[in-house]
Image (tube, rainbow, N blue to C red; front, side):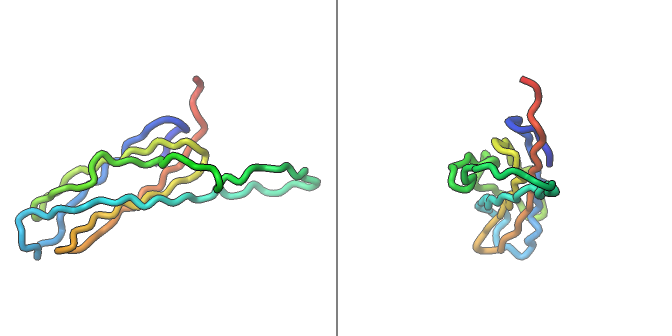
Length: 123
């Protein structure tokens, strides 16, 4: 998914309960987000490049760019539902989010969302 810096985008995941061997009619999954950052590819180096002191970006606290309104979902056997994840980037990096659905009785599965950030619009 792509969005401009400081602009929210919604990702709608289609989640199917593909666990036919569950003992209950419904399966309740707890949902976790695992966040990663991918550094942008470095630009080709030019001759006689000046060295400029920069601050350590890893040392600065950042706001998580992904948010989910629900932390649990219930799905009937064989049914499909839409699960919403919101992406609001605050820095110009590629952000990766793994959305993990877990039920101790039937198992787990995950979806990966890759968020690419574009230059911000004109204010």
